[in-house]
Picture 1 (cartoon, rainbow, N blue to C red):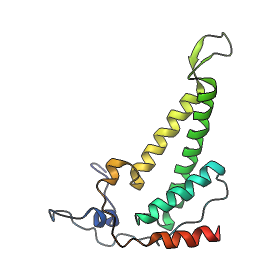
Picture 2 (picture 1 turned 180 degrees about the vertical axis):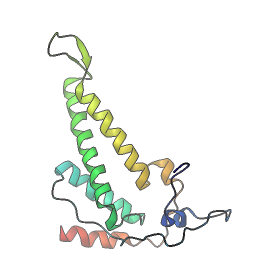
Picture 3 (picture 1 turned 60 degrees about the horizontal axis):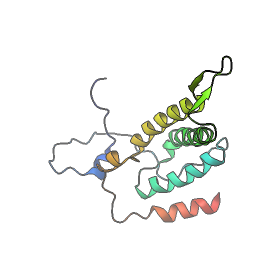
Length: 155
C-alpha cells in the first residue's frame, strides 16, 4: 500500500473537516473505549508511564481497549530510555572499550537512542507530539477523567 496511512475516523472527527474534502470510511471497526488493563510485566517506570499516558489519552478520547499492546510497547521503550539515560549520566557518553581501552560511544547511549526512536513512533501514533496533536481538536465535554479516576481506584 502506497501513500499516507489512513487516519481512523475518530481522529478525522477530532481534527474536523473544514474543507469538507475528507471522506469518512464506511464500516471502520470501532473498539471499545476506556482504559485497557495495565500488563503485569511492566516494571515500575513503565507502569508509572502507563498511568500517566493513559490519563492523557483518555482526556483526548483516543484510548481504547484495543490499544493495550501498543501502549505497553511505548511504556516499555520509555522505561528502557529512562534507565539508559541514567547510565549515560552516570558513565558519560564516551567510555573506554573493554578490550583495548580506546574511547567509544557508550552502549547505553545506543540503547537510549533506539528507545527514543521507538517512543517517537508510538507518540506520533497516539497523538502525543506537538505536530500530531496540533491536528486534533479535543471535544470540550471530555469527561474521561472520571473514568480514569475509577480505573486508578481499582488498580
